[in-house]
Amino acid sequence: MDISIVIPLYNEEESLTELSEWITNVVTSNHYSYEIIFVDDGSTDNSWQVIEKLHANNANLKGIKFQRNYGKSAALNEGFRAAKGNVVITMDADLQDSPDEIPALFNMIHESNFDIVSGWKKKRHDNTFTKNIPSKIFNAAARWSSGIKLHDFNCGLKAYKNKVVKSIEVYGEMHRYIPVIAKWAGFRKIGEKVVEHRARKYGKTKFGLERFINGFLDLATISFVSRFAKKPMHFFGLYGTLFFLCGFLMSIYLIIAKFTIANFALTNRPAFYIALVVMIIGMQLFLTGFIAEMVSRNAPERNSYLIENRIE
Image 1 (spheres, rainbow, N blue to C red):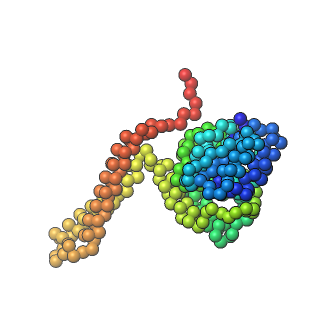
Image 2: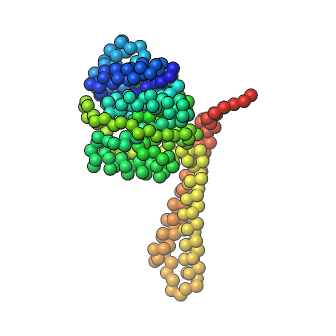
Image 3: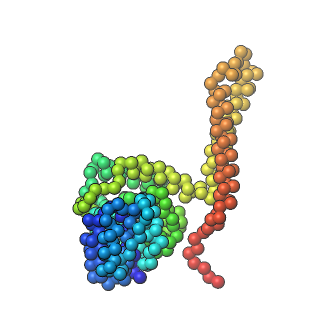
């Protein structure tokens, strides 16, 4: 199969028919073999009934329905597990992503050999103060911390090689950082394409300003986990040692001063208590590193590596 199109959705009954017809026209006119996978993330409207009707008219259209709302990351992860196409394309169900971008995205994966191609909504139709400006700050932070030069990490319109989506797990709210997760899994050919961003036609956005706060927290999480998940002592041990040494050297200075300076009241000085606190923090960080190492080394996936090729 050429293409799997994975579409997570939540209460998007108005747009599904138009979206599926648009996608079908694009892929059939380009002679792609395809499947459309709608992942209903616990919708409370008639989205699932619409999907059932669409499937009755088009066997290439498939659906997955969650018992309740788990979030976009869970929906994408389940869609990735079901995808069979050589190229997997994701898009939102609200018609703000244009299916006309599918052929160009497919060619960038199929012909230019990118592992991932991320859309860039260069010209947006969102509110400048509530979305555009926070989005620019968020993307700048993501570029700085990940080293991936993308302008729009949060764009739902992306294309992947099949082996990429089968090699990663998307959880929590990490859908924003799939390129980062893929990079740390060894997929480093990441491209970008300017895509059309269309004004919302139906309904209203499901995300509020809290997504930017959560986004920065998730960025810190994925940055830490990707670097230190299998070697936590490299983080906790380093900072634990630095804290302990700072406190220890301060304590040595205060002890020497006690015996060399007349009327030197050791316990009346704030530096004495600061030195003790810093040493305790250092010891706690060091012990945290030891415990994390034991947990990591006893995890069943501690030696789970992605093998690209093998000669026997």
